[in-house]
Length: 257
Image 1 (cartoon, rainbow, N blue to C red):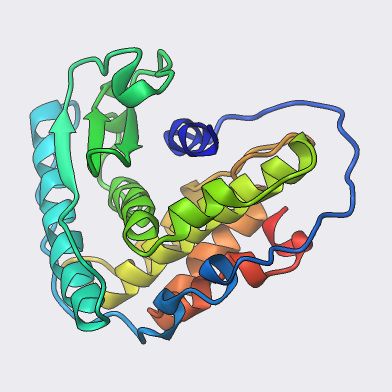
Image 2 (cartoon, helix red, strand yellow):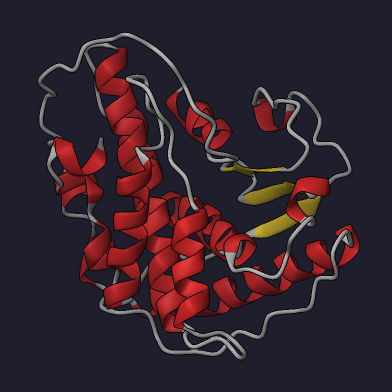
């Protein structure tokens, strides 16, 4: 199932290797993907979002931080999508010390820190491990949470269902579709960051540091996109604060490679 693959790969950008040759891709024809009503909703409303403090090594504070960011996301996207006529429901968060291996029918891996969006329950399962609290002063966790929320936006706007129905001829084509999904969430996360920017105590230096921290995957079997494209889509969303800028489905293959 395509959705389950996306949920798994959204957790972390690990390098993947492979030798599959690049091939010409069939164009994306579904209007639910290329001309979704999401793109006509306008910029996200300007709001404020207060970051909670995270002390180094404090998992409890990191969980509270994520909860606070999700509350901001629900508020902003809720107002935006409701105004656009979308049947909005809040994304829930469930914290685990260890996410069950078959949570939501997924194949959860053994990573120390990870998060999975379950479309069936519209819930983000979060496992905060040591890696997320080793150096928590940057914007990485804020951006990661905002990007994961992008999967919820896709679910609410019909993009997830349309993606699942989109045909593909081979794994190379499937991987490109996967990258279009993932890069769109990166862009939507960037748009949200713009809507609450500047965050209290943050400067453009923090934003530049964030861009240096985000990574894509490498090799020919890329599922989330190469680093340059991940950063480009975050920057595109941040530049406009408008979901219209996040139409990865109409983008050329080179922009989602």
